[in-house]
Image (cartoon, rainbow, N blue to C red):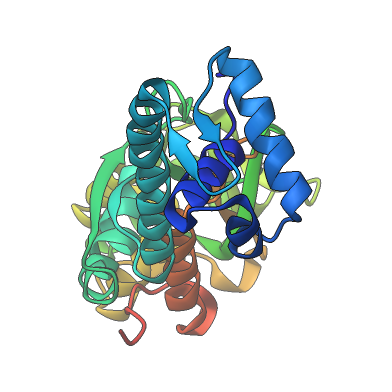
Length: 307
């Protein structure tokens, strides 16, 4: 577009005030600058918009047509600016969030009510993917990722971290016995992940002191599936506290070899693309999630922050 927004505003101000001299003050320009702006606009359009006399300015037929369009454009831009200002105060629109199903179920779902009370005009769209997705391809605004980040093109905001523990149900331990040493796990049913294999590094020491890497007896792609298998007494599992804190509190799962356990924690980050502006919707959701996380001991329970 040849015409600039400032040029359209200058034409509107001159017509509305009736004189170039009177239009200069509200535009914050000198009289000569306003005159040059109008001349430049007419040169770009290759037409005369205003007939100048010693007493007054008069729109040409072409000027009247252009003025009508210019008013509509300027009004539309101002309306858009006002809408953005309102959204900054009260964000609105759709927010697409992606996370692994256990995090969605145990950490995001319990917070939806509180977030919606605080930001009722935001429409949440939740999706669950066990693997990492392309945010642009999946049209996702923000993703929650657990573990070490690899994609440097993403901007990350830390939410917190969560401890890993080796767990089993009382029924399983009653049937198969309590291991006394890490080596005893070789005689037990071990529940692990199909991928990535790094999730099968358990928070117990191998002979070399490093985290024990296990070969699953039963494998699944979802941590929630493994949790359910453990609750059903099908084996031992190593999972994050955020999805098992209630099970442990209620005695449905108990920690295995707690005195020998390594302190292993998984970082949790909210990620979005660096080359996109951080909208109010993303900012408010990530801040609310972080606020709720910090409000709980250890950052692993999903008790919502106060609205």
